[in-house]
Length: 255
Image 1 (cartoon, rainbow, N blue to C red):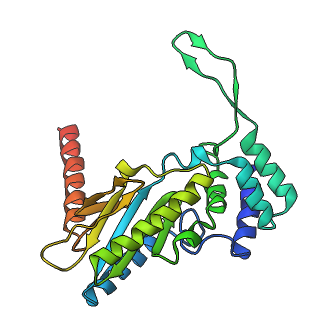
Image 2: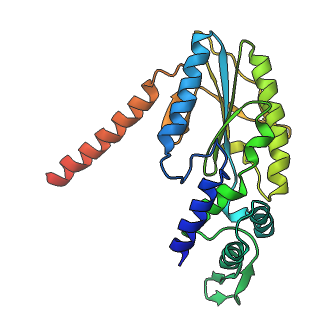
Image 3: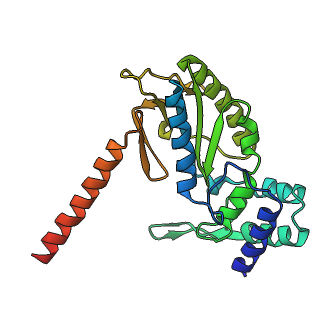
């Protein structure tokens, strides 16, 4: 039944352009390659203009687990999704219970009033609906890419200070949006990278609610390691190490 609902809901959303243009996760005809193609192209364009491109790669803490179902329902109705469909979906994600076991103790079932069910085919689709307007909060400050709950913000400029300022403003507004939706940013798991062709890579100054975001020379985004020079060496080395481990294991197993 969930598969049928997913097909109908997905068709409605795609045909009515509900999903954010920056959202590439779990959508037909789109993949991680599309997101990576966009950001690497924008980095190359910044290089050609001799600009810096500062990127902030965010970690939304347990995003699916903190979706507020009442807010999701309100959004679905605002988007003119058929009421019967909305009712079914909200019942499916609301009427859930958990049983907590600790050693020999078992607590009575408790109802869950927030979050999307793990493993459900509907969850990624519902999360895309839940965050359809997220990009509107930051579009005036910087570029944004989303793949489900993986989010990247970036801005190119001749000035590292301007790029940092833009991204800090975007993070402030994004933080307010997330707070209203029961979500939050895990700052220790976030990374910022300054992409540049210059020999010395200047440090960006990115912070969120008084906490500095770690400024790194490289970051892993959607399975690809993006280094500050975008030469691909760290990613190639990572792949080579993985291949060597597999070969070593295979040889050991055969022997």
